[in-house]
Length: 88
Image (tube, rainbow, N blue to C red):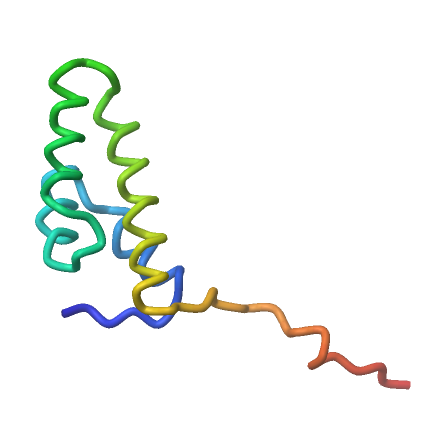
């Protein structure tokens, strides 16, 4: 199992995955289920939406679900206001 430390770690993991690779990777996590894939497959088959749009949407859904499941923080590359001080 992959260990995530931040929101951005999950985002980076999901970004390069194609549609089928995404489902292979995400289903074992429980972030989305087989019924979600069936719905997306049907949406594509019916021509309601295109592959890029569906992939973008389900990746964001999975991202937020995994972040919530693991209670992940955002990576903070900037100092917090409390960490700043005036130097004279």
